[in-house]
Length: 307
Image (cartoon, rainbow, N blue to C red; front, side):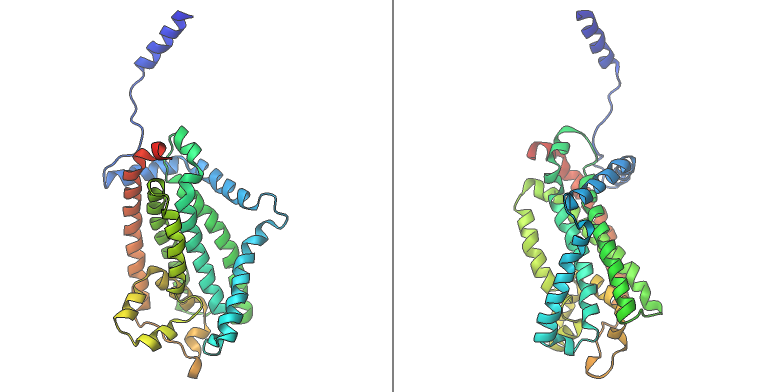
């Protein structure tokens, strides 16, 4: 028995040392992190499936519930703000307009909220097994994308039935806006996930920030209302500097045909350089994603001890 133990110890001592963990190099570390995430892609897929199954576990209606909240919000905002407060009388196809905003808002908030709490929710795995920890926020992103695809399919059907698609270059706004929203939300989500390990108040601050951002984005009111009140001053430029505002407006430009074709009192105002703002937001989101991953990598060293 003693001989076996000594032989095992000798075999272990003869094994070469293999560095564990991610490189902290600001540029080389990103490439290594991407390779590690790709090497664990099967685990990522399993975590996404678990995220989706857990969400609807024991539910008789299953995925139908993912449509329940946005549709309820749509009816509430349509009647409360559109009909009672009169926004629908100045906004053509108000139901489509609100549904587009709620669909994009749901994607962004699900990614941000799910990513922020993802490491805490998987603390058992984080403490026991070495994995590229970005996998946990990314699994939350996968679950959010699944819900978004369901809601987006319903939105496309609604647009086709109620108003029709703008059959021109405006449709290009749709994929660019979705890509930009995902990149921006993933970038911020990575940073928030790492911060929430050290500062648990982060998840509560995110909830409050999301409430403020909802009303600071043209979801239940059109940008025309904002422009009519601010007349292009610095406050309007500050409003347009919000990436969420830009991606939602880009989506509205691509799918809300009446917003571009209505005339008279229903005519809508769009920033003349919306496509440029959207492209700049896309580029900023790519840089922010790289920066967010590096911040996440720098902060992950003590995750196991803090969780």
